[in-house]
Amino acid sequence: MGVEIDKKTRMTRQRRVILEEIRKINNHPAADEIYERVRKRLPRISLGTVYRNLDVLCELGEIQRLELSGAMKRYDGVAKKHYHIRCVCCGRVDDAPIAPLNELEDDLYGTTVYEIIGHNLEFTGLCPQCAIARHQRQAAS
Amino acid sequence: MGVEIDKKTRMTRQRRVILEEIRKINNHPAADEIYERVRKRLPRISLGTVYRNLDVLCELGEIQRLELSGAMKRYDGVAKKHYHIRCVCCGRVDDAPIAPLNELEDDLYGTTVYEIIGHNLEFTGLCPQCAIARHQRQAAS
DNA sequence: ATACGTGCAAAAGCTTTGCGCGTCC
DNA sequence: GGACGCGCAAAGCTTTTGCACGTAT
Image (cartoon, rainbow over all chains, first blue to last red; front, side):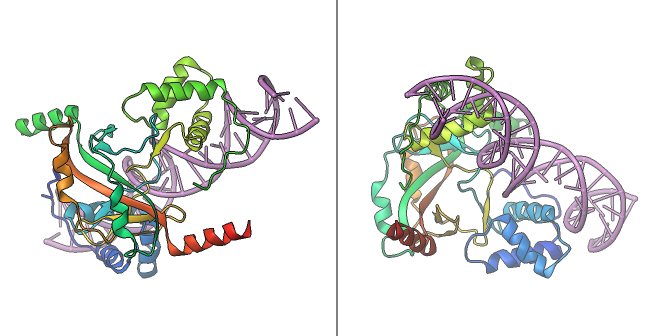
């Protein structure tokens, strides 16, 4: 979405091995688990290379980057359950005007090995400021 | 949810100001924005105190911690859209056996100032290993 | 007195980046 | 030879933690 791959991207040995290893793993791994696995086949590879190639593979559409919880937390003065929409450009977060989907979790009972605790729905988009900026940039090019 | 607040938690000056400032902000702030705002009223407060008090306020149920995207990325060898379920205890991530809800974004058109790009649904729960561990711990106590 | 909270500074994770060298076209 | 990619190491950024000093009960 927006990123043009016009440069010649070579499928290097490192890149190929990283892709192969990701495809092998069922549980979605963090970068450092990928690094550990790839290192068994390419002992001299560096962690930086892994990160760089994960980015490239995402841009190529070969793999998907999951942006899950973790660091970079945010806080909400309202404790009531609701969803959010986040600007992919500047990181701004607002409430999403949509009612909680309480029945969603019912669909999972019996079909997953997990004990379900809850769910979180996050929309992504462009906030007005970033949308304007992007359109101006597109008009200029 | 597991955390018992049995210790006497005092409402200190810092804690109160942090809470007041969060309640004032509409866009859900990251910790360091809260820090900057609080510092205007309490110039000698430390960032560590802000983090510690945000934790406390979450446990008290006064505020909500949003676990959004950001660092701690994970990767998926399958580029096709699907949802995930994450173990809150060990961080394991699996696919959620639920079909994509493509119509969700339609509900937002006209009700948000954002240009919507997509959405992400994440379930939280306990994976089998962690569920067993937790039940054993509960039985022991 | 004692438990809780704070400020400060250091450490800890995870991720990104600068640099010089290699390698492929 | 020029663009791309690599390994290495350093830096960055957010969050956590250890410690000694307050402070309220």
